[in-house]
Image (cartoon, rainbow, N blue to C red; front, side, top):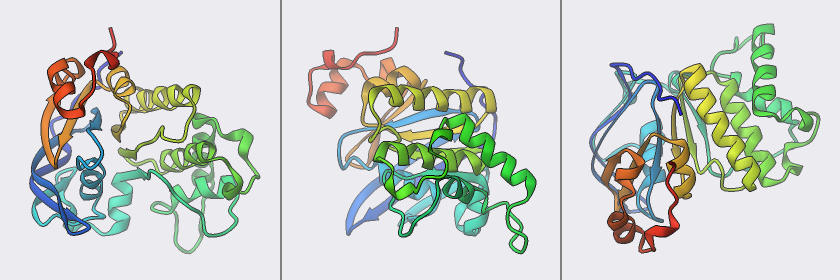
Length: 256
């Protein structure tokens, strides 16, 4: 596995961040710096603060304390379109309120770039077609996205994020609805986007084996705090797996 080139400017930086979610302190004193071109997975048990950290990092949840920066700019100073040009987000689950063809869902990724008066340009349509091909959802074209399986819909949302052409791609449980073959395919795609295209990849994952095999850096959260950050073999040391997850460490298979 080829490690991405790490640049000097952080893609995302959290400094002393506290955050509340549903009247509960979900993050406490989080310091985290993710360089441009990195590929990292956020791991931890249920309620550890992983999804909350993503929401803070992409600006959909304001921290109660601390500072969040995206590519050197305070995220509080950026409007939603400016954030969308920098960060593409694939949510854990998304519902569509009305009938929408798959290709039109993918095309939504071009909204931050399209001309507001003229709509999609030929170059935008080319980017959409390339994203559909890269993710491998061409066989779904013409179908109503609401009628897809959850796994198929998840792949369409990934294609939409790829079409967004943002330098940072953030995914919340991207493999949760996928079968094993498509899980591995999605991970291979993220590695390719990272290594070949230089996209910074930040993903929340529950599957520790997938995280350890496909991500060179893991960030482990527990009760709203970062308790380990680094190489998978170090982060997922047997004693830590037992302490944080309460399971037999032998169940976690690290990459050779």
